[in-house]
Length: 179
Image 1 (tube, helix red, strand yellow):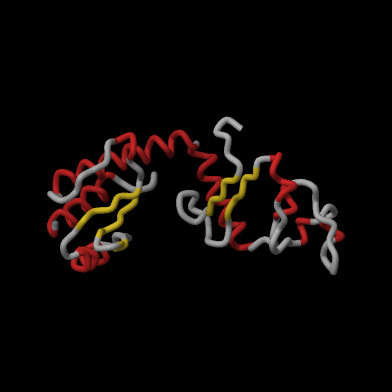
Image 2 (cartoon, helix red, strand yellow):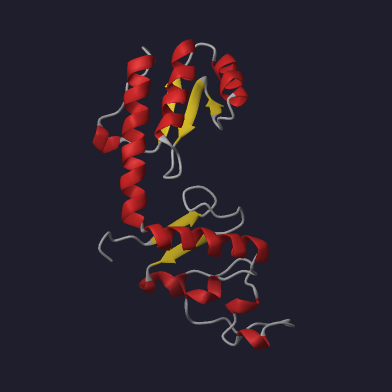
């Protein structure tokens, strides 16, 4: 309870590289008895192997009462993606992401006059760049096989540990040419 968090929910399809349909929920133990599942799956039962056929279900007294039925293919993808995180280590991934984020911010600050990076302590791996003709920049990024998005007239970019420095430099050149 270091951070005094009551509830924390996260999907796994972005940062954790999992498939859509998987996610995680943390509930502080003291609050667990105050919430009820919406669509409990068979694994939410006190005795899951007796929960297949209903109609009633004796819910587990633990957090497993919130389990819904698994999405098996997404669960397999999740297992593989979490394996990558275990193999590389979360600290190494976070350090690499911080390094790539610094490079992206620095490159954009150098090449895009309208871009004002946040102070480093407030940065993330997601960067939003104001662009006059965001659609034209998106066409160039797409032609260069860069995955990005436009949100409210800004080009939204994101880095992750698997990106290369050369890719970031290339993105900076493409975005900077239109800024």
